[in-house]
Image (cartoon, rainbow, N blue to C red; front, side, top):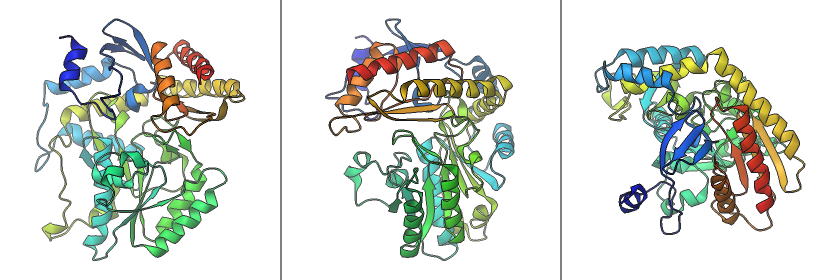
Length: 423
């Protein structure tokens, strides 16, 4: 059997209906923004492999850091032990996080970083003797696939099989342009009517919803409302973190700062699964007690994996170089030029750009679902033309590795523009 036949026999892929899905593409190698399949066909990875790979595939700088760590200490349990890579990584994070973030908790992916934050928000008030059981989230949010993260997510077809099994979540509108006041009013109403522990949000950009964007000033207002009512705020920066929006974190555009932050994806430059949830000292102190039952009883086998920490440290170092910061500006400039050229196309409803993120919304004649006909036609067209893009319904987004060349970006834009003719 060849690779694809063995895959079909043994493997279950994410977000895949195997009865109707197309045969997966067998990737054999990657370099920079490019991937090659088993037939040596070349693809531009225009979404950084689900937003994790900002510095390109087979990055030697990160690979060398991983190798060095592997030959020193590959892993040690983090319960009752510590190690230098975790401590140094924490120190580095404190230099770039909002000033109120003082403690970090390791886990292993974006969903679990959110799971930790929601559990902490609920237990924070439990430890204080208050009954607060409701989490506030945006409509069409996506925070992951573990249970609390899934409960906070609002894209219904991901969660419909589990309705009635979730923690209590109440949704408010996203404060997109023109709907800010409705969002503010809804938040105040929810806080009045429910015992709210926390408000979780994707700052400035809702990724899985189709790169829906809103302004920092609106988020500032929502955070202030929560602070005035002692509701904890959780910034889910799993997608937006580490340069995607043009700044290190999306929260860097805001005046207000959250009580918790969730980090993953680009944390290790797309190499080793790792996630971090960060907290204020006040939150940590609510768990610091002679009563052992007030501890946070949560952990993962690979918590603070030293090799992952080494990858994250190398990733931070790369992000902060003048060359990489210039790449953020360069990619954004290319996006803005393309936006100007495409925004008046008769088949384009809207375009959005923030940092390295570009999105365009295509006019549709029929109701287009998340994995509907238009999405499938577009996806197939992109793959045929050597571009990896995963449209969300009628929304096409580009979120490339920062090291993508101008020529590669231009090819992506050309294929996207040509794709408009097939829908």
